[in-house]
Image 1 (tube, rainbow, N blue to C red):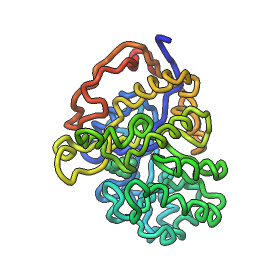
Image 2: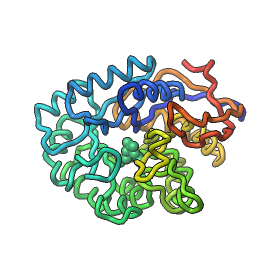
Image 3: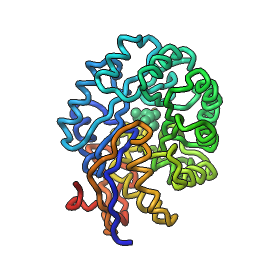
Length: 338
Ligand code: NCD
Ligand code: ZN
């Protein structure tokens, strides 16, 4: 296979940051071939109001013509019916739950899941998707996802009609919990959790550019995630969790978690699906299942990847991307996109 054309993809989990940076990262998303991205709200201050959501979306769409921004808000137990209805009216498609302190800018996160049950009830009523950063802050770092998902069954029985996404699923336990529930529970999968394990980050010399939350895990976890991504289950779809931090910050003590995967994620996915002889499963994973879960129309355009090597820039706007400086076999044919 020398060339692969498929429906324009969606990325159902991105961090675009703020200010001048936001335009750069939004343009990178469009240049990478994405037509639509679900934008996470962990900015400073966070996106919690309709006004903030509208102006953030405008900023993204003005900076990156052709990129459609699907917006989320950060869940706080104090969000009331009026605030949530306004967020919904402003076009929010989902609310994001960050447990307190588990990742970048989550110091204002929710302490106990039950504290936000009032918000979940309103989200269920308003048909807003609940996106979960599924890590229990008090568990051992490698076991945080497993500890968190023990609460999923309770959440489901309390809110039988709520759409729930376990974001950036990273473990067998997380995946099994999602698959055990019905069609209203899904998971996003990143490219880094499909390709790497904890050893790639700390098994030899420390690679801070692979430090992300949830942490990369064991080989058996990675293997199960790959199986799930290739399985054709509509409950498993792509969300890159592309999370840029500057090189200076990543290469220093107390660096934040996050991998900047946006520029390479599709190229790496094409190679991965090709290696497993499963290129036919790629389009549903990146361009269909997520949109269907969210109840959105599918993108109309196409992208074409060609087997022509390209070398990944060492730095994008001061950020070291995944596979920095590497040569990858599949490149986006930018003359073919629609
Ligand atoms: C994300 C970030 O930097 O905003 N970091 C990460 O490691 N994934 C936040 C998140 O999604 O956890
Ligand atoms: Zn994220």
